[in-house]
Length: 258
Ligand code: SAH
Image 1 (cartoon, helix red, strand yellow):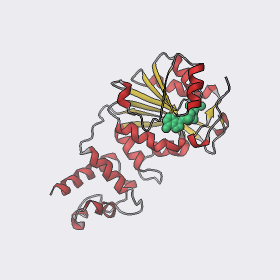
Image 2 (tube, rainbow, N blue to C red):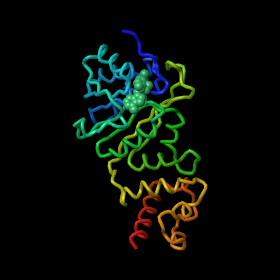
Image 3 (tube, protein in one colour):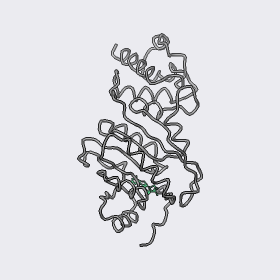
């Protein structure tokens, strides 16, 4: 069957070097669940290796042409035709599962946000992002690339960068380097604060990176003099680790309740 014609608007860069596909599939050996959801399988270069591991594998792919290709070439693998971002993950009927993929780079952040929203179900997230995004996800405080996604993901998952992948092994080659990450959910993934508020506080604090925490938090309608009493008030978001954001969230909920 003819190969799938890469479509730019779907972020399609097909991996053509199978040795890399195998290396990506091998990271699932360290996952704690056998239920795997692969996002954006394309022509199945990764799916083939995942399927050899005899895990419970399901694919979700938005591109009709790719879905048809997969159904012809891998009839034994279950393909869901759909948009991962709109798909109701409860429909999988899995009590837990891991997400894997050579992800469509144009929706990387949205994939992470959706995984985070479903963190009670998602035990691991593994796969390929553009290098810059991977570095942001794994970034530590006090760096320019440390941001909303670093804090939110690391609040619930331990993140590591596994290896890099050069553009030349994809068709068409992307303009950027890629990297594979593994994010393993922490044993304790319930935060000692109001988690909804935690998301809001983290986002607000990074709203203007160069502003202080106090200046970014005025939107919560907390009087300035009270805000300034907080130990983090004069710092910037990039200086706060996850624990500090939890403390800050508890401070904010306390002030809001007053
Ligand atoms: N995993 C394949 C393809 C990677 S390209 C490989 O390594 O070769 C990214 C894939 O994600 C494409 O097949 C694209 O059609 C698919 N995709 C893009 N947006 C998607 C979405 N919202 N939901 C599911 N799949 C998507």
